Image 1 (cartoon, one colour):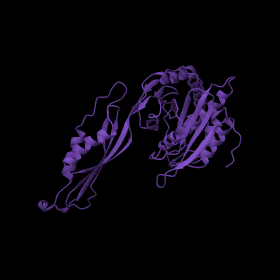
Image 2 (spheres, one colour):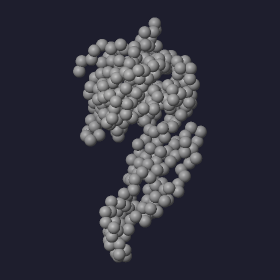
Image 3 (tube, rainbow, N blue to C red):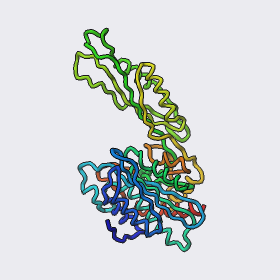
Image 4 (cartoon, rainbow, N blue to C red):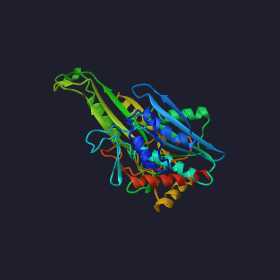
Length: 384
């Protein structure tokens, strides 16, 4: 695909270009072509590669790198994939449209608008009389909204193979709540999903002695799980919580004792726990009733304690908006959970009120102010 020359300093046309590329998870192709066309004129070396196979892949990933002498390495991380648009949009989801003060389209806030703002910030920094010394990288995946198996994790592996090690990282997720700049994420809770299976022996309800009903055992397991209080939270995290998300027997007959009962639970946990530790705790309860457990740990909890990085981000936000942001760990998981193993990481981006919704939209003024904030962050980070 051939891309026309764009005004690199204004995030609006950049966002429109990215949003016009359909890129439902897992994303590949045109949307990465568009971003590469924006970064190459700014002096970035672009490494694009595919990871994974169907059904969860292939996924396209990008590491874009620009070095300017010795100095700190600032990484900006994000994703070009989006959730399916669904039906009922006022205008086409992948035909971005400005109506009034808002830009509408899938990915406006989550998170093509943020990526466009960072690209525009780079162009603004390049206009300075003296470009700050150091390295800037963009770590962009097409697999954040899905299972996240072949995205940022693959990028981290590739970076280690190439000897790329950032000193600090900003993830451009939409963290603002009521107005741009009111919240920065300095951590996230971990997540683990578990599947419980209790097997029995099918039989006639009139002859229970010839059968083994698994349902009472599953009920006892779930009752024991429901009685658990994992913790009361701490200075930076809300209490961990366990939620029963599914119970299934699938018995269509009224006079049959079923042979199997199943349930699913989801745990969101703070940094007082580990995914493996919670799995073993629940496994003991399940196996005490003769059941079986399988688990999938989506990510561990992490915290970047308030310090130099959060101060840097906060000062840049306050300089542009006059707002002092709240430092928070609320919300769901993000790819910051993987990147936190590399270096200090925080998340900051647009207002999240319309993400994943019909008629997702971003204020055009917010795009431009976010670009100014990112430019300020780049300057402060590379001069630190």
